[in-house]
Amino acid sequence: MSRAHPGAAVEVWAQDEHRLGLLPVVRRVWAPRGQRPVAPVRRAYEWLYVYGFVRPRTGQTWWCLLPTVSVEAMGLALAAFARDEGIGPGRRAVLAVDKAGWHTSAKLAPPEGVHLAFLPAYSPELQPAERLWGPVDEPVANRAFASLGELEDVLAARCRELERQRPAIKSRCHYRWWPRERRPRKQR
Image 1: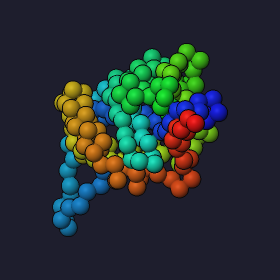
Image 2 (image 1 turned 45 degrees about the horizontal axis):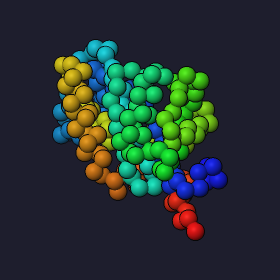
Image 3 (image 1 turned 60 degrees about the horizontal axis):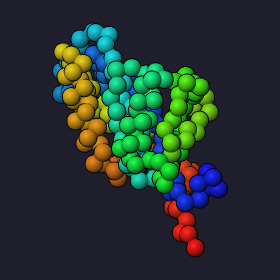
Image 4 (image 1 turned 180 degrees about the vertical axis):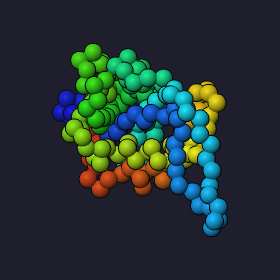
C-alpha cells in the first residue's frame, strides 16, 4: 500500500455488523435477595442492523443503521463512511472485515481509498469491531420496544454517545498486535 500510494496517509479500521430488533436483549441484573427481577418481553421478529466502523489505534468510530445486510447495503455504508471520514486519494483506509458473503462478493465495489482486508474465517476474536457490541447493547438490554423506529432512535443516540467515548473504545478494541498506521511522506 505504501509503495502504491506514497503520498497518502494510511489508516487501519475494522468493520462489522450487529443485528438488533424487537426480540429483546436479555441480560442479568442485580436484585434484592428473595425478589425475582422482571424484564418486559415482546416477541416480534423485525430487525435492523448496526454497521460499526472502529479505528482501534485512536478509538474513533463511525456508525450506520440500515434495515438489512446485503452487497447493496454494504456498498452504501462504505460510500457514506468514505465520504464522512474524508477517505480518498490522499487519505486511505485499510478496512479489516470478516468473510461474510456481502463482503467478499465480486459485486461489491468499495469507494476509492477504501481497501478491504479479510480476516480468517470463523475468527471473531481477531475482529476488534466485535468488541463494540456490548456497549451498543447497553441501552436496549432488558427493554421492550413498540416499533423499530423507537429502537432506532435509542440506538442512534447510543452511537452518537459512543463516538465521544474514544478512550473507552480504544481500551476495548485496540489489540497490542494491531498494525501501525502510516503518515504521508514529505516530498523532497
